[in-house]
Image 1: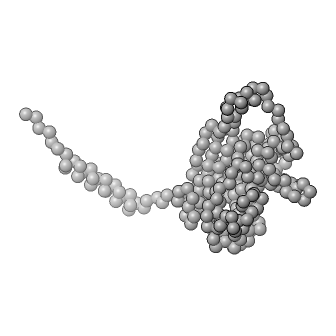
Image 2 (image 1 turned 180 degrees about the horizontal axis):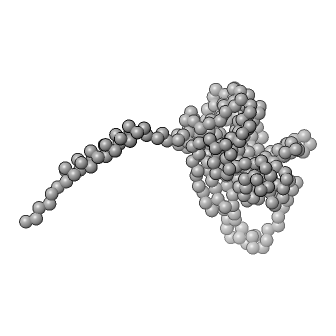
Image 3 (image 1 turned 90 degrees about the vertical axis):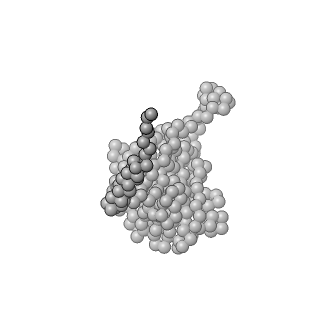
Length: 275
């Protein structure tokens, strides 16, 4: 059941005047080149200890670059890569802002042509803490129109992008999937935030991407450009290969070359004579 708020006279006037309300103020891109942080608290990405337990692996590679020279490659069953920490409860878990301020969470994804499961998309998760209750809002292609028929509508080996109107299902710790009559509850993130399933104090603790536990060991996919948008702004996490650091010999050659260029320019300089 969704909660509905009555617009104030001022808000209705603003809408009538064409004023955009709650438009993101800032858009930023954060380049992610490493997943090595064991506790990825809020600004860095990594895998919490014990998360990748199904024989799968996730790493940044150049196998299928999306926006630059790389992307996040997912291989095998049950992979998890995230920013933020969802465990520990209030005061311990990372606080990435109120759920009610979230406008969207989207990403780019690709299922590799050699994947053992070609109709199984990567999953995108928003972790939420609401009092003592921890839950996840999960995007999967099977529950979004046009993506469920992946093999025909979305051929493998190509990139696709989600959008703010896509739906997520909810998994609550201790309760399991949120179902109504045996069917998953499916809502956009903004509708989940406005529903009676969350209080106004609910906040985001982490963002996660990866493959589910049913992916199988032969699963192969890619993820990039995870974009988290709130009323305060938008951040895109772009997974890229780290630029190689020049070897000492290369540095010496570069410095030597610059010295030769400088000497050549000095020899070619024209002397000015005064009559």
